[in-house]
Amino acid sequence: MFNFDRVIERRGTHASKWDNIAKLSGITAPDAIPMWVADMDFAAPPGVTAALKEVVDRGVHGYYADTGTWAKALTDWLARRHKLTIEPGWVSPTPGIVSGLGLTLQAVSEPGDEVVVFPPAYHAFRRIIVANGRRILDAELVEANGRYVMDLDALKAKLTPRTKVVFFCNPHNPGGTAWTPEEIRALAALCIEHNLILCSDEIHCDLMLGAARHTPTLTAAPEIADRLISSFAATKTFNLAGAHVGACVTSNPELKRRLDARILASGLASYNAFGMAATEAAWRTGDDWLDALLPYLTKSRELLDKRIEAAAPGARSMRLDSTYLGWVDFSGTGLTPEDVATRVKSRARIFASPGEQFGPGGASWLRFNFATPRSILEEALGRLDDAFSDLRGGR
Ligand SMILES: Cc1ncc(COP(=O)(O)O)c(C=O)c1O
Image 1: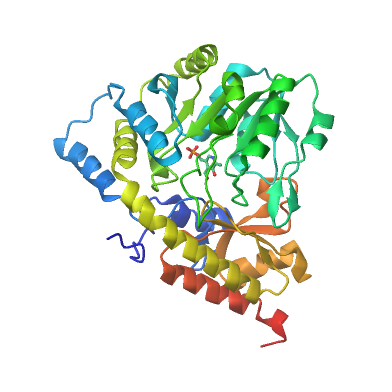
Image 2: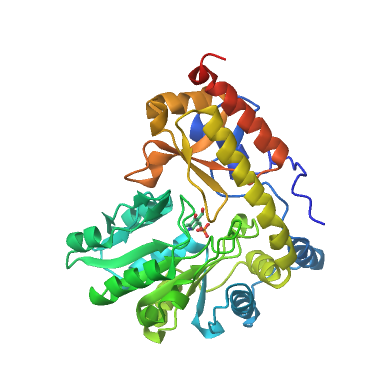
């Protein structure tokens, strides 16, 4: 019913993923394949396109009136897909999740305060903390049984009176870790004990692969509700990143008041009509599309794991529970990160995200976005096979 194999030409369409390759990676080959930024090469659900067409056909594009249907669509979605009950009145729309995190920092902390991040972690966390004059407190993840775990004892030892906020990515990017209810509860207990605001970025929560399931932070640890701001979005799930709309959700009215004050102060309390229409339609009509997408992504993940580990002996691809962002450690190949980068960029003509972007623990890794039609993924995997062929006995 949905054709994820269809190749849609995106070059020359202001698609950052394709049109920023040369600028950001230095790869000038015309056949370069982008496997970096987290958007997909698939058409959005038909219900989204229909909703946008309706807007376009009307031809009048005035200010958007928030009549409450958008937040209701989100609450219905979370109840339907994640058995999570929230109220529309807890929701503040923001121009994306990252801007919501920045506004939250302004609402609940002061310049110079520390914000906990669990690296390797989504690079924009670091950027928004520093851009807001706050400081990063790294709580490095450790690997156990092929997945990431948090070392909360090590984090406790690092906390200072200036530590005010925790940026938690649930599920985690990179690595795709679906945190267990126990892990979430332990983090919540630490936040309560040390008076920290917990920001739970759940933008990837719909993109669960195979049998993995998402546990919302509020579900696992309702006791943290008063100091919790959860972030949700339709943009990652339904490939609408250009819509730039996200939702900050908190049941604490005082916390919401402070956040809304920052939204107002930044002139962001009026919303982009196209983004609101697209994301509301996605939550209302996107179930079947998503149900078809997830097995497609799961198969692509298996392909990437198998082929990349065969191509570069010693490489390990983390078994993702979630996301379409393969996370591959090349330290076991015996190659330096520079050598790996050159092979991938120059020989394979593939733009992958360098692991060092994700902070401590990322240097020997690359992140490969595999949310692309299978024919493009196959081409990329074939090129990687060639790029590392000398490691396999000079074939
Ligand atoms: C964990 C995480 N949060 C937020 C974002 C981006 O959100 P937005 O574009 O809404 O700012 C991404 C994009 O990759 C992400 O991986």
